[in-house]
Amino acid sequence: MRNDGKITVFLSLMISCLLLLCVTALSVASVSIAREKAAIAVRSSISSVKAMYNRYIFDHYHILLFDKTLDGAGEAALEEQIGKDLSENLGDAFEIETVAASSFFMICDDGLSDLKDQIAEAMKYEAVDYGVDKLREKTGGKDGTLSEEEQQNLEAAEQDQKDAESGEGTPSEDEGKKLPAKGKKKDPRKFTKKLKKSKLLEIVTPDTLEVNAEKYDTTNGPSYTVIGFFPTLLRSDKSFKSMSELRHELAENSGWDNALVSGGLAVTYARTFFNSATDTKKNEDTVFDFEQEYLIAGNQSDKDNLQQTVIKISAIRLPLCYACLLKDKSRMAEVETLATALTWYNPLLKVPVKYLIAGCWSYVEAIAETRSLLHGKRLGFVKKKDTWVTELYNLSATVEKDVPESTRGLVYEDYLMILMAMQGDTLYYRMLDLMEFNTKLSQESFEMENAACGLTVDARINFRGQTFTFSETGEY
Image (cartoon, rainbow, N blue to C red):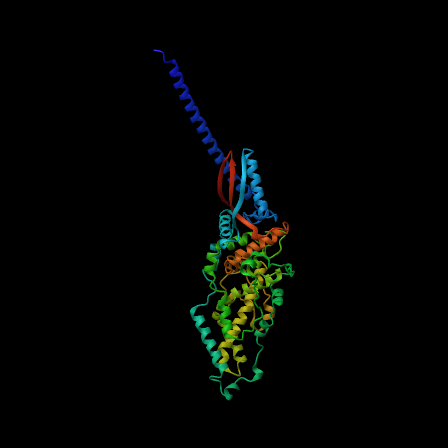
């Protein structure tokens, strides 16, 4: 039987089908490979953008971010750069139809979540010889809060003062003559009343410390944009006339332990990467020499920031000195004698005046301690009577005496950590301020509001009539 022709036709059809299948498979594979190549190119373009991180900020602060405007050229310039990268990576077989940076993850967005995450990451690997746990160990778990008994005594004295000043229980004329006017002694509160900020700074700063009074405009920084320009403007001159004011000052800067725990990483980071009055070598060529003081006070000059920081440290020390003085029978006897002399005209004021004089004396002692801290001394956190250096009747001279050191005490920057912890999220915004101000010294166009930590790129890419659509995201 002759069937050679039929077999040939059959084999030809089979081969044609196989060839068609192979061509189709190769075509599908080619498209699939092209899509994957395009996707890789898009991801690569995002990596290229991330590789353009600000080197100054990373080198100095270990924070990764890039300028979405490419040094002021604009977002369109960034998209053009992404398109150029895609074209170079894909070749002539691909056509870039559209490319857009559809969204950015900004350093200042979402409650600074990206900044906080990077700070937490940086502190995992940064060699730190100090931290919040060690600091809390040195304070013995105390944070300047007065005991319940001490607070009750202050409340009672405040009521006595109100009663005496309102005329209730005013002593008789005979009682008022028990101590004649010539028995009055000099009131030490006159010294603290005249203690202006400039005078305070003159007392506490070492002669070798140069304090710059030149102002720098901070109103364009991230902190101003978000929280406004609210610098610290505390008074150092105190009259100690009102028990209510004394109670407020004794309580205002206490109870900070929880803030120190919650802000532990941030304050340790700030201490690691920013200068202070006792360590100006962490960063060179900075807008402020005293950077940690700026983080605390937010003023526009080193002088103003140091003044306010000194006042705040003295305020932290005030209740600790006050509690120590109240337990010192010998010194309190001096206080009581003076209070008796000063209230000869109305003995009902004796108790509140006694507490006010004690507050005045404690404040001067706190200033003496702050002075020793700025001179590089390490002082015990809990005040003890054998480290007391000021004298009630000679405050102006003894305020500059050196307070005895402690081997396990706190140094100046430890108190800065406490004060920075009390700033909450303001601390993060002011850190961004300093990063921006210092970066602008060499990169004038840099603005923190343009700083991004990631982006999403949307792209349409054509390959031989096939259009691929991508939306890829990348973050540090």
